[in-house]
Length: 408
Length: 70
Image (cartoon, rainbow over the protein chains, first blue to last red):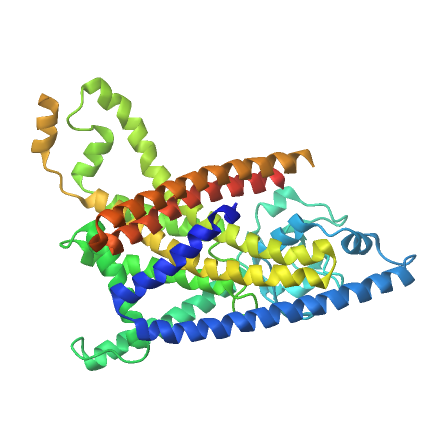
């Protein structure tokens, strides 16, 4: 479906850059960013193409190997090499995992932390898989096994013990959690150093280094998001919240676009992550809501009483659908972007020729560039909608207009 | 196989909707800018936001199609 939007989005991308340059006067930084972008994209292209080559050689070597030892090959391996399942491969890449792929056959095995009736227990996730990357049983306090990506307690026969599994609390550091830690560290380093710079030199002197990179973005959130939606009087109280969600989503979106180690986890395309953010927005909006907001929900002013009864449930549902739409919007946008890039790379394996990469790789890089725009745009949209909902909840209404409307 | 095809048709229908929607937004924005070039920046940023909303609806459909597929 993106195909229809490519041209429009290309134009949007260009416009977006002009907006950036015009509004925030950071043309200089944009230029620096541009060269950085070019370097990172060409690096990405090189890595993609070499990875593809390596996989291709690997695949052909494996098929030769499989052919020579066809009699002894395990059935699941034969299936894996025989027919390439695109949907399965893509879903495997966008879902959360216990190990983080670094390079080649090396991956980082993250710790599994479990809380059961016998207490806390932790072990390496390496022990949950055998040498063929198939789930294996680990004998701890209970027998654990991965079933569809989730750790479950199994009995001696390897069947899932449903009753015991309900007592299992999984606090594992998965790929998404680890990636979230990385983004938190990045944010702390960047934001604290900028904040310290302000502490040292004050707000009157010209910003330096990282500070001058952060200042236009923070000002953008303040001037384009907070003040127009919440109002010049009340926005200050909500700025920390808005900046936090903005930078958290932005960092995770950007990290998700890096195809190799420090990135590569699909954090903001994880519905649990977006749900947490949406719940935070829900709490902030409803805790700060004033009387007139609740009045407009339960007893809409300026309406006939029968209409008020009719509107109350609709408005009440609206309270919940707003954060739900926030949740799904971010999740769907980021997941769709990842699926798009992965399916383009999968084209090479579908056609089973390395020449398909001549089309797939430039296209994937192009989509990657659009995803850079989407990454920023979704962080912006999420923050803007959060600000808008806060603004709606804290708005002071003038009841004369409603009474006037009632008389008409 | 049949399920996959139906999901693809659904995603395609959603793409038609999003295409029309974003087209309308682009049309409106260009007309607005042509009438009031001095408001171009504001119109453009509003256009991007509105386009993202329309696109999000299409992506909801993509997610539904994907779930239907899997």
